[in-house]
Amino acid sequence: MEASALQGRRVIVGVGGGIAAYKACELVRELGRAGAQVRVAMTEAAKQFVTPLTFQALSGHPVLTDYFDPAQEGNFGHLDLARWAELYVVAPTTADLLARIRAGMGNDAVTTSLLAFRGPVLLAPAMNVAMWENERTQENVAALRAEPRFQFVGPGAGMLACGDVGAGRLAEVGAIVVAAASLFAPGPLAGRHVLITAGPTREYLDPVRFISNPSTGKMGLALAEAARGMGAKVTVVLGPVGTVERSGYEVVDVVSAEDMAREVLARVDEVDCFIATAAVSDWKPETRAAQKVKKSEGPETLTLVRTPDVLAEASKRVSGREKRPVLVGFAAETQRVVEYARDKLERKGLDAIVANDVSAPGAGFGVDTNQVTVLTRDGTQREMSGTKREVARSILNLIQDFLPRTPSPSGRGPG
Image 1 (cartoon, helix red, strand yellow):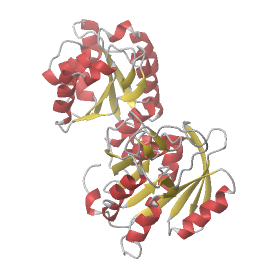
Image 2: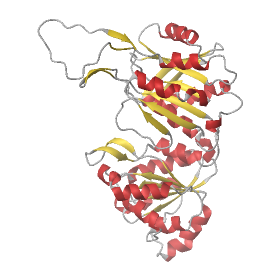
Image 3: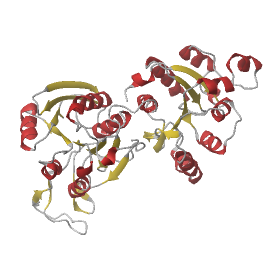
Image 4: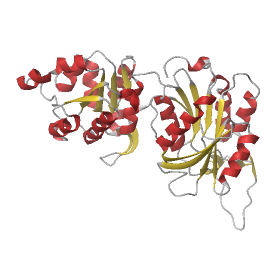
């Protein structure tokens, strides 16, 4: 769902007391840029990280911080705020806030206004990885997820402010805005089921060595996030990329090309669109040793055999069907990029292919930006560049016209 769905919408941002509170400043600004009317409530702890005056300047309205303050309550108190809003976004949602929201407590400006609010709530957790993984926190998350009015975005994974590595980072501001927008309208891909492969595969020589590539899955996951934001039900068949954002779509973890082919072929019949972004290894060792192979003197010989061509097999499986899914491939090349991509488009019977020069600066593996050329079966050729999230939205907008008129049965219902 495009952020324009927020135009004129009334949104409360409840700010919790964590180091990620400073990112809520950007969130308030971006919601406003998307056209939303924004008002802010803060916990007492949040005031230790960002001043209310900052949020007042960004939102253009007084900030609710103390429901015992007659001046604040008289101006626009917690009950007025709750009645005014259409959506409540809590960012960051700390472990303490999660527990208090689940318990139905109302002991600060955020929880009192949230307790009186009857509409949808978007929670954006942010905390230390140990706090996120704590059994009590996960119980609170599960209990809130079970209530339809509560939706989650994040947390992301990576280096945390405390120096630990793992899940617990506040979701990117852009992702929170997209998630907020998706709660207001069904989106252009509502009722559609999109299947995406992402990341690398690993082909093991022995228990400790493998053949692989530098793919991090960023492009495929950007497509998954964009498709979800446009209302689709999304399934990601994901190679080994480590800890990544998984909320909002089904993730099927795989390791080898054979694993990926098996999971894709088990699902491709039932989806509306299959986008193959994964960097699948073309070869694997002819044999895999059960134990670590010890090095020896002299040269070594490694015999390789071909792995399954996931996209080609999927295309062959659905070929000729009246309501076959839209098939989109990726061509990661280092030379004659468009020529090789066009050959792949025709040879595999695709609807579109995204040609990617992975040797170009700011494109390819492991970076947050991309530069691609999209070729379609009807002869369209379009250049796209920007962040991978921006490129993902542009790709999905382009291929919408190829979607079948009737959504697949598996795509019906909320994504």
